[in-house]
Structure formats: C-alpha cells, structure tokens
Length: 170
Image (cartoon, one colour):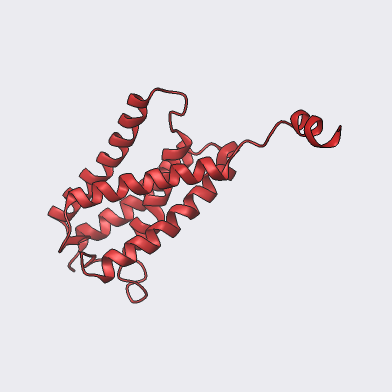
C-alpha cells in the first residue's frame, strides 16, 4: 500500500490542471492553445527524456506508462504543456519589460517551488545530479522558446490592401 500520497498528488494534479483549463482557456482561443500545448510536449519529450535517461532526475512513482518511459507522463505531457499554453495566452504582450520579467519569474518560480517540495517530501521525483536551479533555468528557457514559437506561429498576416497595392495593381 505504498505511494498513497504520491497517487493522491498525481490524481489531484490531473484534476486541478483540468479545472484550470476549463476555467481559463477561452473557447475562442482554443486554436491558439493547441499548437502551444503540442509544441511544449515536443520540447518536454526531448529534454525530459534526456534528463531522465542520463540519470539526473528519477521518477520512482508514475501513475501512467510505467513500462513505456522513465519520465513522468503527468508532468511532462499534461501539466507542464497545459500551464505553458495558459502562460502564452495570458502573456502581458503590451506591458513594459519589467512586467514581462515578473510574469516569467512568477510562473517559473511557482513551478520550481512546487517541484522542490514534491521532490523533498514525496517519491514522485528524485534529484540525482540535479537541483532546483536547473529546474528554474530549464522552465524559464522552455517558456521563452514557447513564446518565440507563439510569436512565429501566430504572425499577423499582412494587410490585404497592402498586398493588393504592392503586387496586384502594378
């Protein structure tokens, strides 16, 4: 009957993340959230497996796919991509750099602090050759990369009037 608290935390994480998505993911922005979610899954698949396979992090208890992968399906493929999609949807685009920095810092810090306590008090994650500062850095960098992807993927097309004047009406 071991891992009772771990099982509760993992199930609670699924429920809380699902509720966050239902409450804060506007239906009209779903088309914007899905590519961000999938892009973040791609990044966490690559970096997460690299960290786990090199032995830097270990996930002793996993609720899903225990024999398929050594990484945490819950965190790497659902929670982290979901939070990243919400991060990008609510990014303070028209605010000053200080506010943007605080937005990155607050989001990254929240995840890092939660991971730190989960690592310290449960068997959901174990740091071998890892530290909270690596988590903080990697979360910040992947949030930044996802923001760059968002800006590239959702580029506003040129005004049709400009296109017509420039190319069609010569």
